[in-house]
Image 1 (cartoon, rainbow, N blue to C red):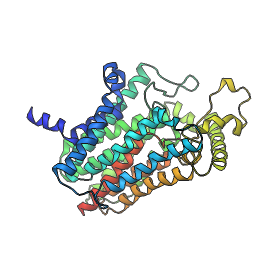
Image 2 (cartoon, rainbow, N blue to C red):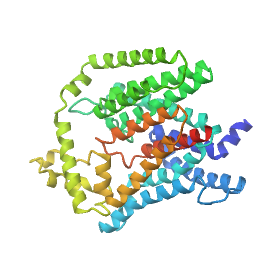
Image 3 (spheres, rainbow, N blue to C red):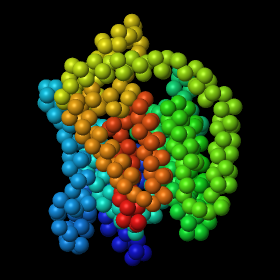
Image 4 (cartoon, rainbow, N blue to C red):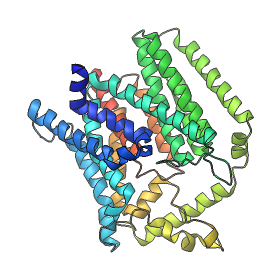
Length: 408
């Protein structure tokens, strides 16, 4: 009981509980938890306890080389970009009332705390295993709402959940980007000869793969397959068992794909690639480019690009029957809504994460590269620049990269 109490008053305990809330979103189903603002309480607790732990208990000095400094500078720049867009767009900081901006700011300033603790090898398993578990919970929650509650789009029967980030393309990205992380933990368990842990992580990876395919998100599934193919071509050890395991894993995933494809709806999604969904995406790109050219420095503001969708795409004739669409490309969406300033800040986060991963020499780096590839590719056809789970994942990958560099 004493250990549980000590865990809960430590930054790590508050951090893990916060991750559980933002990943599963289950607390949003409980009015009491919403009314007491549990998510914000945990967010504030993580910040205060981290500062106390690092600078009071451990007596660390806040120098330029401190692991919290560079991440804090990067997130401050990105958090500033929507404010500058709001001021120059003359809505005078109205963006501060935007719910997604509030969530973005919270996660931006919590993510360095995640980086700080996850970069320490002793915290790796408790944080990563918790995150994988929470994504599996999200997966079951997704399957329940889709297959039992029948929450789907009326026009194509794809999942459309009545939860935060309930769009199938977002969900596919979240499930897919975590698959290599679960596989990395499974591989780590193999090297330690802990078979039960290995099986649990392999099952988690399989559940996440299945959930990704159920979403029927074309680019998300392609990105997942590219990431898995990349892993299959890497050498992790000189063990004679590695190649047979890869062949077995490939056959297993192939069987899963065959089962899903034969079900019919997914194969139809790929055979009808030139459908309305694809043509609408092209129109959002057209709008995004035009908005960027008109507001190149600071952009038009968060969620403002869709306001000119009909004007710049000349579509449709009966606008009352359609909703204006966001720019369905993360990088173009940032350029249009946050301008060059926001794009530089966003790419700084991406490049910093990549450098942390690429600098590691440990073979486990390949799992991080695969996860990064999946996220980057998925972002080509959806706008996920403001999603809290994306920011968290970038910092998770960066922290694991930093940890692997220390381990060499």
